[in-house]
Image 1 (tube, helix red, strand yellow):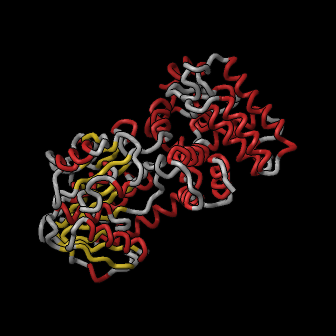
Image 2: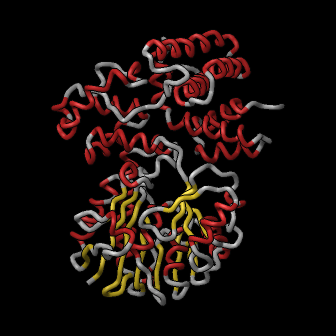
Image 3: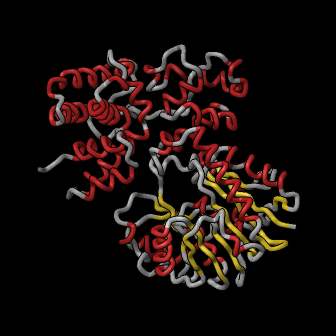
Length: 490
């Protein structure tokens, strides 16, 4: 049976809401159909967008329907998500098309008797938006601004009180302010508007305040861009740049990163881009590239990457040390290490050896390493734009479990380092319990270690904090959120 892009998106979302990972569910349905490139892009946008905006879409249903979103039949709720997402967040889809195709979706999936309800709910939202002057062909409908809602009880959130004047001015102008109940706290308002659980908003706002937290939320709700790291053992950045431009693939350079190029527009298959088969480059976000420079490996070093897969940082270390020395890539998952080995072969790297093991139990490295990298498993709060369902999977409890694991990995890795050696700890999260607190606790328990800031001329130096560690904020630095600290043993 020929299925529409929206039907395929519905099938993927149904699997996500039943527990599947979004990227796995999407890949599965796309592998079973033959779609045009525009339809594949539409399916991808509908699936990732609906998962990303889950809390906002539920709040819209709560506002529009007598039964709350969680009381709706699960499949009907998914269908309503698809319709409301298109109306409020996709400028390129006409409202009539969004409404009519969603009604058809209801009919095709066992809700013919509720098609009038679906039609009425969607059209009521359109009228509500139009009534506020927030839509129309040139209104930029559905674009959530950085302006934030008024605070109800500033005494409950003293760290946010400085945000009040700007927040209060703009609440009534927000395109989605219809769904905000006056009794909501400022944390809840922000979580509903930008679709995050309250606890993540709290973690960020305690560090940034509400205004900048809103900017971070918006950044994380945008589709991710793709960065490349040029393999300078095989070619030059200028050569890759020229090859991409000749193929009609616009790229841009990234400040402070001599091996990085950013793809400026969506592309098809990554493997079809110039230089892939020749090993000229690998996909790696700019933030992740900073980690290799912080490790600063030297030719001849013995290095362990304790949590190596999928291997981007491992290979960067090998490149930076001119493929001379030894990089031990450790990971618990043999299948992920196999992918690392395949990429290393493509890039022409020979100094990498893999070990399938838990890095909390590798006594053979004790006192043997010049440098060690612990790129620890983490909550991923710096990469929520890439992993759209992570915001719903992680919890404060899972963060504490991860912090325990991170402590164990860091303590074990420290025993591998030679005197005067280097240990770099990094994460792709923005949670202090996994970052700053982790390092402070480690230093308190290991008095023979100290933070060593990056050298003034190295790429991470542009982002170093007064404490000596590096923290990348996406809304400020326009790359994935990351934390990294370079520690030296006396």
